[in-house]
Image: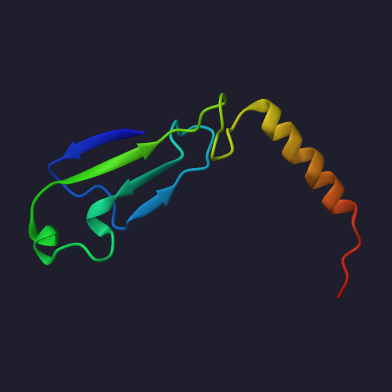
Length: 87
């Protein structure tokens, strides 16, 4: 996780997920948008954001976009596409 202080608000929402392979981080969170913040927080300039990064060692909490996981996804997709859809 990487903490970044800025002079302006970065996001228009509390959290944005980035599952794309070309984005190096998994999600960005701007705590200024978190519920139950003191009212004066919203009128103050600047903000703090955190960027979360997936890792492929230890216990990754998010999917790591790498070729092995992409191949595994495609394997499950093929199996899912073969299943009959019940209505």
